[in-house]
Image (tube, helix red, strand yellow):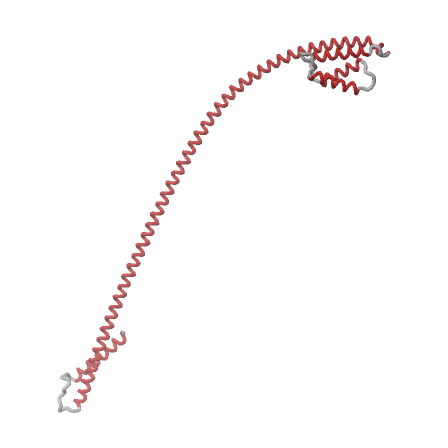
Length: 276
């Protein structure tokens, strides 16, 4: 019951469960049956205190005895003494159980306090261990961070060296390409110069050949003219040979010399012709 005399929720639950058990009971209810139902209800409703259960037990059993004093049967008369003894024993047992539970509650409280102290000590130790672990983890994190920064610096330096090497290689290749291009241009210039000189030589050779051809033609014409003159002279010589008394008016050369000159002119003309 509550401090103001009202019924607590635990008592209401107890009365409800007990009433349901009594309504479901088959046959006549005797004191031992009611005690059995009370004990079963006590086990079922765990939140009720020992003091409340003792008061309920006494109130229900007393009311049941008073309400049925005039209607007890022969079995109740026969068992009255035994019931009284059992009731007294039950009451003593309940008192002992009550005292046992109080002692258990005290021991439980002491155990609880001891457990709380143990847990507090464990919490303190765990807190100290956690602080130590936090410090260890922080130190490990610092070392890891320093290692990470050092690794990043190393990788950055390696990347810089690789980039420098790449740039140097590109510069070397560019210089080689420049030299190759310069050599190619020089070779092309040399070939162009050779072609120019060859062209100039060809033109000079053509001019020389043309000049030789011109001179050969000139010589041919002169030879032809000389040959014509010689033929005329030969003709007049032949005519003069038939008139020995008349001196030659065309030439003062002997006939053999004029004949040799004619043959030479013919040979020169043939040479020039075959040369052209």
